Amino acid sequence: MTTQIIRYRVADQEKAEENVRLVREIFAELARERPGGITYQSYRLDDGLTFVHVVTTDDLQIMMRFEAFLAFTQTLGGRLDGVPHREEATPIGFFDGHLRS
Image 1: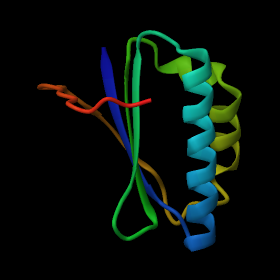
Image 2: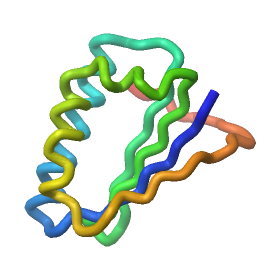
Image 3: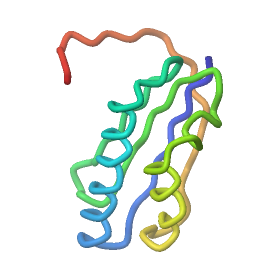
Image 4: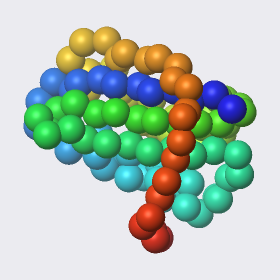
């Protein structure tokens, strides 16, 4: 399994809201399709403009199967303020004590 952490900042509040909408569409499609072999998390940081995505999977290309993810990535460049920072991470542990829908 490979874990990637992607962090980036968008240009302004309007772009941030668009980003949130597009990310929610990704999660909606993932919920409908229920692909196996992937965990995906996304966070908006306190400044309101910085986002972090964490994906763990055996196949990093799995996200390319989803229309919502393709729409997100195809328009990301127009929302960015700078260059996304991507790095691999080694999981040490994971706990989820919350039930989510």
